[in-house]
Length: 180
Image (cartoon, rainbow, N blue to C red; front, side, top):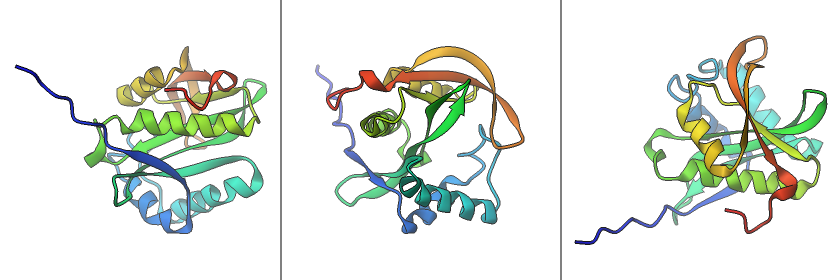
């Protein structure tokens, strides 16, 4: 008796656009934001959306919507931005996958695509991710993408609130377009 594994759902990352506010609203739920301080107010969400739109023009990062299938269904987001961390400039990365699309391998493929985009900028040597120590799925994504676990840290997110996070680091100079 043979079993077949279904082909992974095809995904792509596309630069964040004005119309992605609707996706950001889908992400802004108690379930989606339980590890990062809960949902944001509508005003803070608009500020976040504008920041995502401004990243490329400022040269500080890039946010992407993750789309799947032939109809380009929005299934999540991934992005990176420049920040100071322990005395050096690095990129910080984050991602979200909407609940109906979890468990399909989307998060790690989106995170890898985002990491490759960050590497192509040539701006920084390191890419960090700071998932909560309690966020097993995001920590698994870091492991699968190839981040090295540096240990636990107190990480400020959202601003003014510290959370216990894992500090994962990826060497962007080691990534090549064919990485998987």
